[in-house]
Length: 366
Ligand SMILES: Cc1cc2nc3c(=O)[nH]c(=O)nc-3n(C[C@H](O)[C@H](O)[C@H](O)COP(=O)(O)O)c2cc1C
Image (cartoon, rainbow, N blue to C red; front, side, top):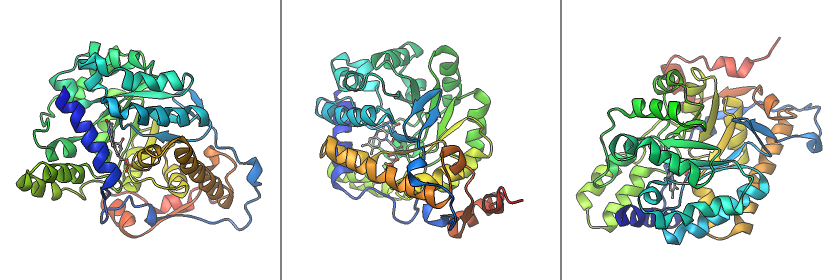
């Protein structure tokens, strides 16, 4: 298990220090335009960010995405993330708990989250492929109990596992394993990607087995193939680094993935993957998401401290408020109906896949 734990530390180091974001295959929010209202008929002070997610009242539609735990050195990062999530009453997910299920001495790197944020909405996390290879439902129950989780997010990461030297690539049976989990756990099961997005086809499979929410975690932000290429280079695996680098820009852009998933999935949708500003959050919600999540910016801010992470989130919240004011949206439900013009690459992608982009621009016209 030391190998998993050490890998986690290398991931954190690389993500904090190196350029690990996609550059060509962006999140697509630059092609999503909220239609400005010159007569918004709303007062900034009346705008409400509160929302419900899986039956829990949050003070803003924001999620600190799954990242860490599982190594003594990252306990402090989880503590900072949880403190801010708790104080601002936004959602948070921990990183994969597999290491702590197998080596219980690592539990404290996760339980710290519940200790500092007793009332927050916290999601447990586990890899879907490990449900097939080495984790049983009983183990997953332990992950949920470990942090008294409100829900569990199960991550799908085929591009990551493929790019990783010695990655686990036996993805046969993953859907069935998630289905079993849904039947046997008492908390909602959220399924997420890790930066390559979820298609209409896969969202339909997930809808059919009854997952409670989907986090699209699309392309445009942190690139796991790129992180693994950098890690392979560090460890002298230069040929494999070249293979992994070939997939650095792989995936469905987040803006596209939100539309694809929403068109077939009528439960809760989280938008993440390259979400970097409050404006991105507003666009994601107007495209059909319920929450917006961010990982890398939260990690980088949290590595500097509570104050820095709080400042980052407050900028995001104020930008979100601004976008709501300028679209005449008094609350999140109204923002979901704001008119959106989709241009460029995102429009081309969606039209090629048969989606009607005009319906977003005209929505509630008489
Ligand atoms: C350092 C780091 C560690 C991560 N570890 C996990 C993990 O353990 N489980 C998981 O589901 N996602 C993990 N992710 C993926 C994120 O939750 C997210 O889906 C992805 O980074 C895209 O979001 P971003 O562009 O805002 O970073 C990790 C991301 C980062 C940056």
